[in-house]
Length: 272
Ligand code: NAI
Image (cartoon, rainbow, N blue to C red; front, side, top):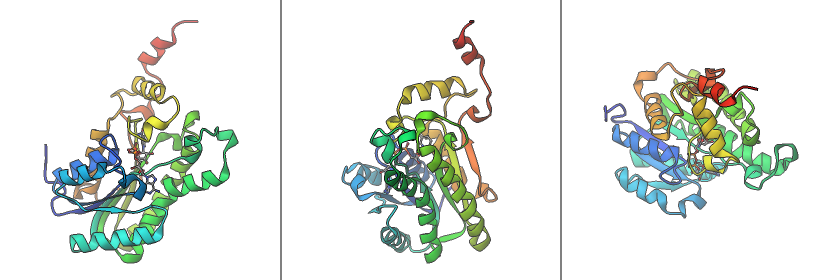
């Protein structure tokens, strides 16, 4: 159900790869709530062509390619977006993650540091790059809102999450640090949503993902939060109803983060 929560707002959505992507679901919900959108992804992802389907579902939103590690791409993206919407941007979704060591099957203890540098750049420092570009162009309106997606491996160990755990810890730190400066300068809010394991293109790439998903389900009083609900949460953070929320890591995980154990898990352990 739509509530016109984003009526008149303009947003940039990074990271919609296909209809399983969190960014895909979020773009649809933002559009439904009245926002005008610009869609972006890495040029290589755009070649898959799926994002054009999303664009058609979002009022023919322009699709602009940008590698999030390339400052020229990011500048061009913000400039073209502002030109398209005829003013400043009100919200940005950073829904980006990629691990070279995971992709190439390297164990955490045997990490390739060159790949690790790229992982941290794509998955974490890219948020700094996006914010810096917007800052330099003064592209985000007062009380604007930037949300990035994180995971609880930033706080606790999930061995197969590998170097992405470090990337998420860095992402959450950039959120706090840049969030401070952008808050003081322009009242722009910056937050991360720490999402339940979700079956998406990136999520399914984590080793033992089904085990991950089932364990989290059994350990969450409400069960795992799905991508459609994550999209709803993003909408609230982009709306004017959450104007004083900034520099936070917000768990959207059905209670997983504060649960020590559930009866369901105890029952599964059996007796010695
Ligand atoms: P996804 O694979 O649909 O999204 C990742 C996106 O990052 C893709 O669209 C990809 O093209 C983009 N990307 C990769 N390298 C890029 C680059 N150089 N420049 C621009 N874009 C680039 O998967 P998902 O799961 O929707 O991921 C979105 C975010 O949610 C990620 O930050 C992920 O870590 C986070 N997240 C996902 C969870 C899950 O279980 N799926 C759980 C918690 C957080």
